[in-house]
Length: 553
Image 1 (tube, rainbow, N blue to C red):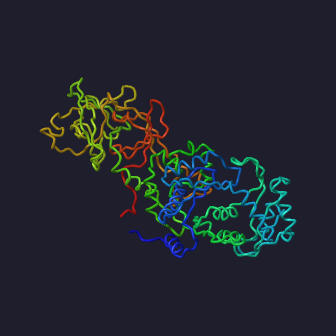
Image 2: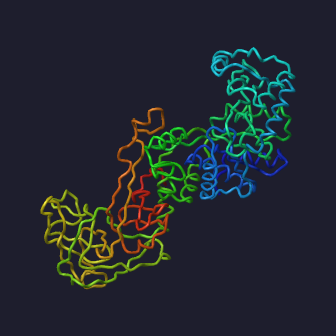
Image 3: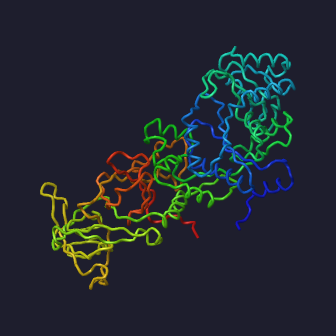
């Protein structure tokens, strides 16, 4: 049984002590202004798994209290991605905007208690008066208005009598607090914009730090689990709940944020990549969005395994992308069928093979999983092999086909190269003329004859054309480490995508469905595109066969 982590221990102690008097309840509160990414998956699965561990509830709540960037497109995408990830909240899907009236009433309660006031400082003046880490802030000249005057002004803000930025509602806490988040933070601001759900019902919207604890309390959340950057916000979270007199209030607790080498997980940067045309869209397979990872071919099982491998972390951590690839290989190595695919074809003619003959060879679909069975593969006089599997002037250690040399065709015969045919115009190698040993097939008199190399191949007449896309990291590494920063543009890898348009696959590829996973023999694991085009197969290489994860046991 795995050792209990610090978050599980804290929740168990609360449950045993009866701290809340209700079942454990966690939540994931995304703002619907973009698509989920691998960092989101860590937060989602952390909350989801903890709720399941303690037989509790997991809520999905959209933090939709900013009408300027939010859209139903993102809501639908987030729900679909969470379902695909295997962390469905069931019927527990909520919207922060549905609590607008309750949150507004809480603001009025704070005003009546003398704990909030309407301030007319400009954004620049607010920033200047806030102070620094070493200097206290300055009281607003509007801080000591009466509760009645503040209440009237706040209601006028609600009625739309003031333009954007004219007034804000602030908490009255302590402008000299060493925690800047407690220096009379803004609770409400004016935004005259149409909300994607509530239309023009509201023109004032709560700040996240104010709405968040109230929403948690309304839903009966017990443990509001956030990433580490919210630790300094926890005193404000607790202040709001205490001033509102919430019984058995939820607890905010933090866990470490996980970054991945070579990827950008900031929504702002991702949006710039998409808007600037650096990538095809939010589902570009080079992006760490769940849409992009899914389209590339990562499985939900591999992402769940990835989160499990990382475990609960207390501080910000950077994890090598190769761990995610390792988890994918672990998932697919026994579940994906292995087929032959030639990505850069070179024609081979077997001059001693009967011209009109075609035979069927039987190959296992997966040597590690007998349940996947076998398939029939056609073999005839004309074949295609990988161009890289032939060298006229072989480099040291090259063990594949050379002039006068022999190799075994995987699952078939031994062949020997007799002649190299070149294109008359370009001088490039156009064709190899070879002979085959008819007794070298499995079961034949020469089946045990040894040759140094074995290569894959595809029979020419029934080969299935396909486009194959190969990927490298989107960001180039700097100083031995990759991280997202303001200067990410100059680190974009010009070789992040290679498109091969004239690939050839076995005939069984004709039965491929969207998102089908294969191991292309000697090439890696590949996935059929999620958006198939009529008469056109597109495959994405998810990962090469070689496992680069150095941390595995």
